[in-house]
Length: 389
Image 1 (tube, rainbow, N blue to C red):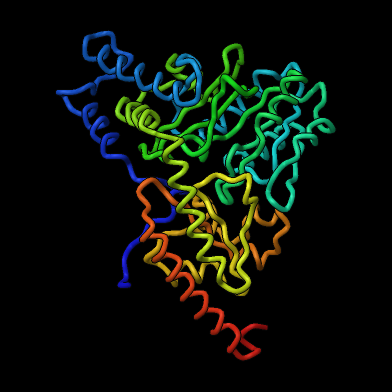
Image 2: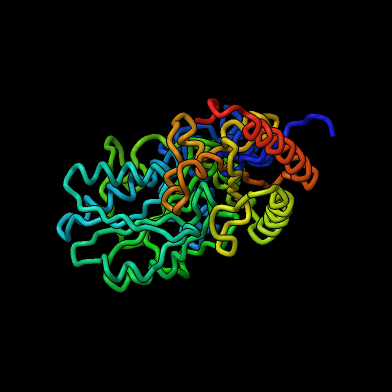
């Protein structure tokens, strides 16, 4: 095979679908729905109609009512609004927050901020597969617990949490339950009308939509305190002029998702990738193989630096961890929470397949990764002792 470019980092972001891009373009020029959707003239009403249609598309994808969707700039803002907004709105109940040690930084850092401001935070641990036992909530929920936040699909390992069981325990104690579903929509089932979840963070760019736009599902009857002020847009929770083209793009991306078809395609690709990589001596899969999203595969190559391996196969876009932490040199907090040593965590690579990934892409990635690991392992074993001490 000759050198080629292969994109296997869809957990970081996905290319925009051509139909989505075309819909967005219609909302950016004078001949389209470019106006401020809050304006009352004909141009504004046209833009507002496109926003309403997009809100309905997002809601339909997750089994919600359109009025429960609040548009944001992305899942990070949604996480902030969920945690800080819920804790502020229910201050009279208490100041206890429960979350897990394997959350995305958007939740971890927000929880740490809340702790600095007086909140009591309980950090749930996971097992070696990355899973959280829902029964642990029985021991940590109190009458002062305001919110539990546990992500649906982990962005580094693809591990799926039992959010239905977690939500049931929260609902029984009148505790709000939030989940970050940025990685799950379009890959695994998510229907908020069938599970006890109160707040859900969503984003567009993980589902072939544009960056810079996301949403927060807020169950009817749940109150949040706004983080920003200056307008009544988005029920007063998120003021500011809505970017019509991005909102429309998110709506189209959610509408075009085909979870049944896409999930099977992704699963076939991921399993072919693992079958190929599993032949490498010493390789191990990080995270549950039975409770995982079909698009993510996290693999450790003992004795080989994940960053060095990533550079050795630079024509293949993969990640040595979360894209949000790419500038840090720390070991993955997710993998270390699962019990991996720093050395093993640092030897890990995240592969994530997408709608446009082909079997040829997978076979090429397996070949190049195998060649690179073999070369790097041989180099490490032949190095003089002073190079490895």
